[in-house]
Image (cartoon, rainbow, N blue to C red; front, top):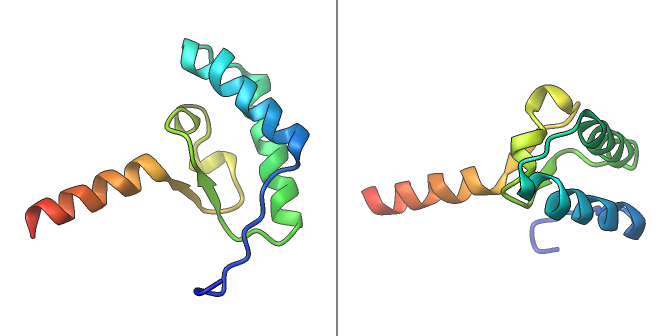
Length: 91
């Protein structure tokens, strides 16, 4: 609120399927086209709802979803944290 952001999240059923994919597929080293397609569908739906960017809030998701898979900017939280840590360490 303080930054004027409105956060959109996938619907509960979508979150449950994403959770399943993360733990039963991605964490097991299984990368299926069907999973990538599902993530694309969820991203497209969020874009239609007004999303302007997508936070990839799990370290496994960027192993499957790349910039070319999204019409919106992707924010890889692991990369963002790593960059912030390096910046802090070099100060």
